[in-house]
Length: 221
Length: 250
Image 1 (tube, each protein chain N blue to C red):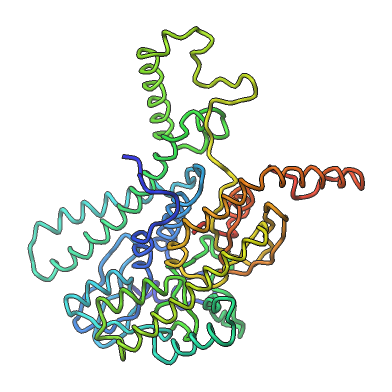
Image 2: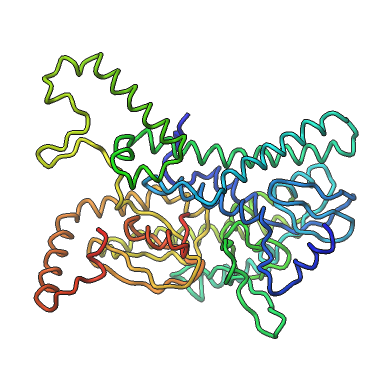
């Protein structure tokens, strides 16, 4: 910490949140949201994941250098660094795995439209496409090929019944408000609007909560 | 490879989140600043107090390199006040969460810490478990935090056994309120239900049950809801042609 950091800390006009903290907050928020939301959320733009991956790589390199000298004083610092790295990696891994679980469950749904495809990252899109292709080939070779041709599709929407399973967007979620604002929710017996204050926890349908969460006025918990 | 856990944080994940809460420690040994992924730790010089994440504080505590200062809300008096508030003053709702942190802007005004930041901070990144946190208000991660502190650093908590029994009382009072709020769903489900002041572990504990009830009611009342919406639309269409906000985006 040098004099600039100290000055920034006491400067009343700066927001006082260092980059690393705000990245960790963003990652934590993304992870919690992905764990709670019934559908797959947007892949974060703005290079958050590139930044995080670069930092993890740099930290691993640092550990490799530090393990070289086994000085008892740096030894404890090494333990702390490794513990923190593991915590960070857990967050990243759990986030990606939660996304893969959702993609696996409704692969065809997320591949069905351009809007939904854009939520996936490049690697996730490649994974989903190949996974679906493999699955389709397997079905074809094991049983679909003996069906009549018109029944071989996996994404038939004939007769107003879609074969593509999609997540339940009306599922109930818990959100916590980040700003004071009125919240409108749809209910079975009544649609009501509630004036929610910062920090308040609400239960409502994901379809009602989505726009508030996307505006950044609330987060999923 | 894919995560096999159900949607919503499970208790171990809530505890993981809680370990990111910042806590005040009194170091017993010097320790230089360490560059971490979440930012550098303050360099520790006894006996200057510093705020560090709980996981690090517990690590230092285990190695007897520091003592943890429990937050003001974890003191016996504060807990007694809270129990009094929960049982006598307001027997229906939970006690209010701590107010959002404010900061002087140098011109004699106080404004919220978060008001213009690009990334709005929320628990566990708010300083709600440090020694500067307000007494008499339970932060979001209160239960996990108190449990962890009592399990690993009970010698740092003044009159730990009293605190432990008061916490149990508090937890029971609040759990009963959670159950009554669910029983309130019998009379009808509105669009938004507020749980002002609820804690993370309490939420995680009853998440499955609450969402189960809300989902069940929604499925049972789906046809009634659809006909109500149709009726409203017809009435709205007769009065004026403007669609109401509720009909949008479904």
